[in-house]
Length: 115
Image 1 (spheres, rainbow, N blue to C red):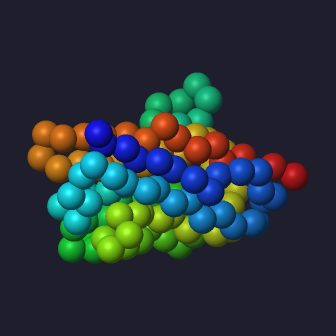
Image 2 (image 1 turned 60 degrees about the horizontal axis):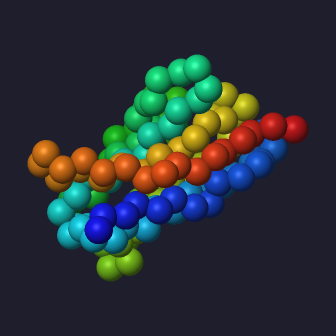
């Protein structure tokens, strides 16, 4: 059974930091392209950051310079370090894993940026 389980969300003040973690099981993690997406109320889900099997990274413009995606293949985990958080970063953040036609999602973790 494939599972992607996110953790690390919460309430943080503007300018603060959070580190999201996604634990994967049931897949050969190192084969998967991993990504973080987010969905704010009333908006479509959007890509925040992705990391390939070789470690190549890509970021949404809104995330560049503030967020860092990383992966630990030994631990089957992908991380999203988020710094200088803004109220507009408030959303449910989802972990995603893709390998060919296989596409898996986590259940999401809420990130709220508010004073």
